[in-house]
Amino acid sequence: MTSDKSVTAGGEPEAAHCSAAPAAKTRVRDRIFETACDLFYRHGIRGVGVDTIAAAAGSNKMSFYRSFTSKDALVAEYLHEKEREYWAWWDAIVTRYPLDPRRQVEALFEAQLEIALSSRCRGCALGNAAAEISDDEDELSTLVRAYKVKVRERLHAMAQAMGARDAETLGDSLMLLLDGGYFTRLIFPLGSGPISAALAAVRSLIDVHCTRRSINGT
Image (tube, rainbow, N blue to C red):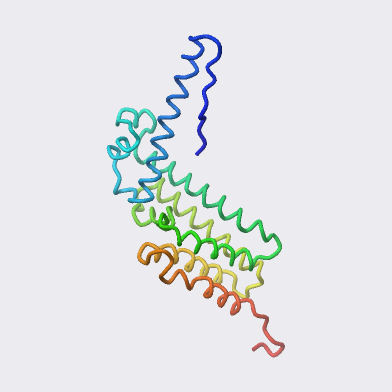
């Protein structure tokens, strides 16, 4: 999230007061939001309350509710921000190989493994949220579901671009590996678990689905 770190005060004391007030309010809101993002990712959405967020941000509940109408509103913004960050990460990787969909897929899994080797990695933020959000929380569950649908659609499209005989099956298999890798990261530390085998599995899947059939159909 981008915040305005500088305040242009102007020449007069009154001008300084008028310009500093909204900037200070923005900084408080950003601090609360950034603190909440960190706490939600490390401890879960349900495991972190408004009091904890306000205290960790050096603020209070009054400031919290001046910045966000509710905790659910803050959670929705958190999920939108994490989705934005994820697609920025994804696009930065695949655009390196514009004419090579197989290399794009492999690069995504290579980058995922690199993330898993970080001690700060707690898996996929939206995937983790899906385990905590019930279906009756319409806005939040719809947001997470729409994100996962988009991931699935992108993988289907990449499988199609690779010439897979059954692009949907290959795309879904890749998604299982992608999401499964993140979840196993929560159990096995620093890439020591099944996620370390994901790239080899990806290559094997692509080979099976994209190998051209011989003339006699075998």
